Length: 180
Image (cartoon, rainbow, N blue to C red; front, side):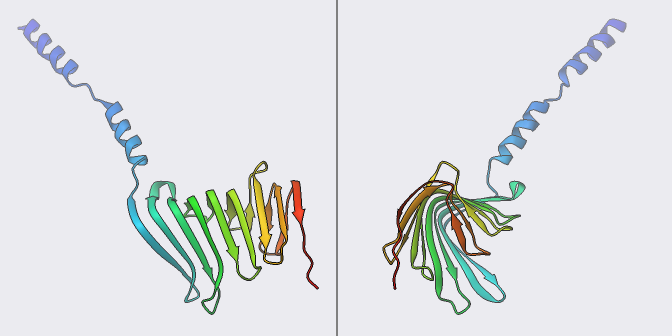
C-alpha cells in the first residue's frame, strides 16, 4: 500500500511541472506585435483649435507599451495660423516617441520651407521637441539649398528653431548667394 501511494505521489509531482518559458515567450512575442497597424494613414494634429501638422504614412504601427509609433513612407506638412503650408517633407521611415513627441527620421529625407524658400536633404535627422532642435548624426551630410542659389552642405548639422540658427560642425562647403 505504501509503495502504491509513493508511486502515485511521485507520478503526480513529476507530471505537474509548470512551463514558465512558454509564458515568457508569449510576453516577448506580445512586445513585438503592434497594438494597431494602419495603412494609408492621415493624422492631423490640432493645436489651439487649428490644424498645425498633417502626417501621412503608407503604414503606421503603434506600440503602446513602448510609447512608440513607426511610420513608413511618411509625409509631413506644417501649417501656419491661417492654414498656409509652412514646411513640407518626406521620409522613408520615422520613429515617433508618443510620450515626448521626439521624432527620428531616416531614409531619403527632403523638406521644403516656404518661409525660408529652402530645401533640406539628408539621410538621418532627429527632432527634439523639448529643445526645438533638429540634428543630424555627426558623420551624416546634410544639404541646404535656397531659392537664391545658396547651396551649403556639411556634417554635424543642428538647427535651433527657437533662435532660427543653423550650424555645421565639420566638412562645410558650398556657395552663399547674396541678393541686394
